[in-house]
Length: 81
Image 1 (cartoon, helix red, strand yellow):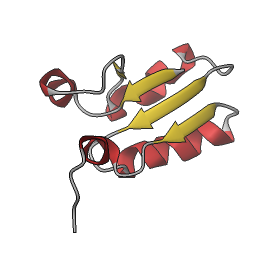
Image 2 (cartoon, helix red, strand yellow):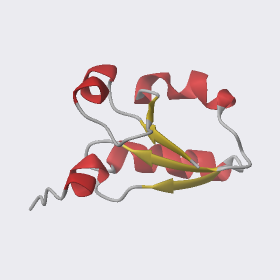
Image 3 (spheres, one colour):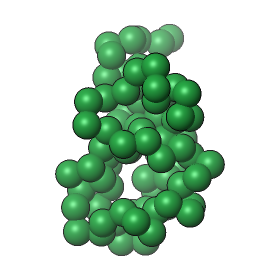
C-alpha cells in the first residue's frame, strides 16, 4: 500500500500522514507512470476534491486506488461546515 499526498511540497513539508510520499497535483500526470498498478494507492489532499479527481482518473487506467474522503483535514479530525 502506498499513501500519496497530492498537495504542494510546501504543505507536505509542514504536515503529512506518516509514510506518505508527496507527488503534487500539478506533477501527477508525469509521475504516475512510476506508481505500481498491483498495489493499493491511497490519495489525499487538503479536503478531498483534488485527490478525488486523480482517484477517478487512475481507476479508469486500471490502478487500485482509494481517496481519503475529506483529505488530511478529515484525517486530523477537522470538521468543516
